[in-house]
Length: 394
Image (tube, rainbow, N blue to C red; front, side, top):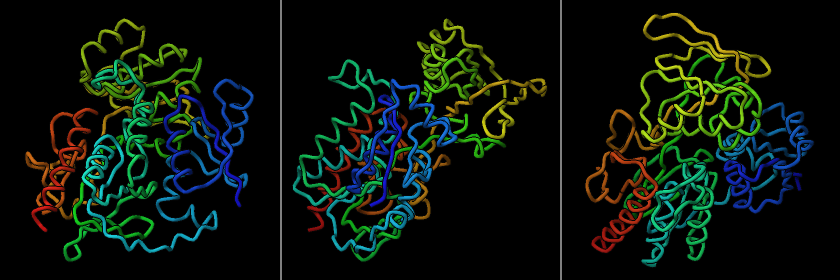
């Protein structure tokens, strides 16, 4: 059996996602908690040559972080690396097949299972965006709770029911076969459902500028909550003007030696966050376009262009935190369903798409409000609509 090591930190949501994926595959691993151990943290940095957590090793080979692990699993390469036979056919036909395991997907699974329906979830991870949110203070009944904490409660609730969970599987296609809706995955699996609920949420946008891809994990990060503590007493830039960027600026001001918040235009985040950032001492650059992230083994700088004067501006930084919003995770359905220009799936008031028996809930649809409570409510609503569809179809 291969030796799997996971370097983690207690507050790191992507560490939780990595461990959940490994557990879903019934794999044993050694967790190396670096939360309060600078020597272990330095060991992780030296072994991986990366400035993010988690860092995963299989038989002393560096695999990378959670996204790398999930990518290997989604393509079936992880199974091949571990010598696991993944050729088992999925012959079951589920009453309700759900893509995504964030608040919408887990809520849909819970409501469908309580209707005594046969339910399966296909998802790259458990929790979605909710799993990487530092703090949630507007979920009814919870004065304040971390995103991973709320994910754990959702998951514990769904675990009371017989729900099939295919975690670490990436949906890449949606087709029809007779009366079944079929989701195909990057690993080559085909999962059949009599009804289908798309709850795949949204994912972080990239800047798509030179240096971003090559320096990912080497100073370019996408989660301040996960990786912020690794930049203690360092100079960083945060790109974005929405809530996530403003929250990251406030959080990192207490950790980094200097924080510069860069946005293309005026901030779009909540006004209460505007006030907190303005009072925090963060350097603010509005009206600047990121051009290139510089560095070889690690980030050393960021070049910008003033959008009014076209003059360039250079920042000497050790890290670039990218917080520029979200894009709907709907690629697998674009050829089949109607979407808007942002890739969000069009639904009616019953969350029905243009394809009978297919519903879309949460951030993947074209609803105007994107909140955890709304996603959870839409998941429940979609499950009840799917139940009604099955009843009338006989």
